[in-house]
Image (cartoon, rainbow, N blue to C red; front, side, top):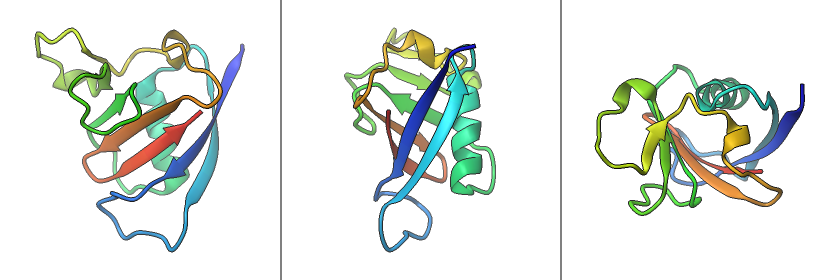
Length: 114
């Protein structure tokens, strides 16, 4: 099964204690896994304590109202067609090398760079 390798960088804006410098992780996800599973991999890779609600913005900018946003499935309910389920596989997002995503959970804010 093909997989995606994501190089992740934790950026400022975290609700938690900030490290002295940038923190990087490399995470591999299969193309059939979902953003929900990517969020769990991020949580484990960065040592975030608890699972929380999350969102991914395709523009690479947090809280971008013009961007397509993938989020915790049980938080869906908006009629806005830019808000989509986090049960979407990353392979459907058109990711490419150098593409930046922004992700946030209720306790962390991180930049995700592919």
